[in-house]
Length: 259
Length: 317
Image 1 (spheres, each protein chain N blue to C red):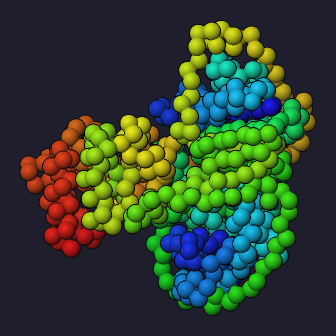
Image 2: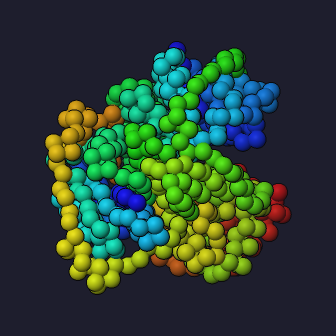
Image 3: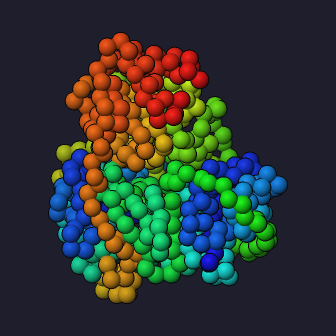
């Protein structure tokens, strides 16, 4: 089975994240880049499926040069090879552009199964997997907390408000996984060393055959017109519990008409 | 005024609160037209949609629409966008709602905005990003604005509409039928409201200390008719099920009232609750960052404060 796992480098959520003041896009230099947490579950799931069914795991990322670190991590976990879609023309791509660029690349490199994390911790749109399924015309098996492949049939448990839906489709398909679907492995020393020798193919916009009017900030279907640091919340009242903390809290809730 | 499509969220034939919020928002910007997808439509639903101002109800109530994941609803909306040329499409920003919005955006070559917490003239959306650290205004610049709006972004207000029904038939493409729902499994969730929709959420964190101790969080929640949430520390420890995790990698909630007990307020958690209107924190550590957000905070032992609060609420009801 030919599995492509999509990973994204995002600013570390533990640092202060910003938008660039010139074009309101993500400031990738302001914070350390790390692998999007939810993508680690996707990589782990891809590796497990490969271990169970054979085949190959290819890492696909789109991002600037430094996103290569994210590729290395996924390779160190055990993926076989990687494709890095990198081009200045991709800067500022919104979800529609990104899904276009990724779908084009996926068509080019081929796949049986595409696996993603359910969302990125920076943009948090949660739309990319669905958009890829739409653009590729394949089954959308998203928000999975369990994945089973049998022959060409893929069955997932899709997380819902009330529990889950059992959803079936056939290969090729796009899967997104939620947190806790598995326990992502740590790269071993051997894995880290091996990753250095694994092939990473860099693709520019022209090589991926991307239409210039579909990518980058200029092509975006939406725009950020204003961005500002959120004003700090007005300082509230903090009291020390002197044995009446619950009563005082109730007084506050009453004053706000919650009781 | 031009029409604004609102995709109705419903369960067992009942319209969910977030839809009433979306109809209220739509009314401030145009003429709301509800889109009902899937079975369950009847008089109660119609009455509810009319009460909150739906001038029209586009009905696609065949079972087939919900037999497949996301694709059919996106195709239904794309058909309506082509036929009715609405000014915008509003969808609840639930995980599935956002997926529908995403596919619809591609089908209609339109821009999409997710997790709007407000919407004003010209369909300018307010978003709170990076865990609530940055506020942005954004707008769609191509096609029909498709906007996924977070539950609790506005208070629903009744204002009568005609709710004139119009049947819509969609012939689903094979692509829309590629992922079939073969079974729906309902897990016990009791009588509590749904986490993302609840007006009040009571969450417990590391300070709660064990699964058994979550009972005191649940009791407080039940006294307020609230949903129960948990921090990642608590779900990682296995004290509370993962689906109730509020935070960066869990659910995002925007309730009227959020009570955090035994939660320090790390960015991981704040990202999921910072847009709550009123925040109350109970924590024994006076330095806990959660107090920076709190409208009211108690530095104290949650095992003393929470039960006392629950008792006091019961008394005052």
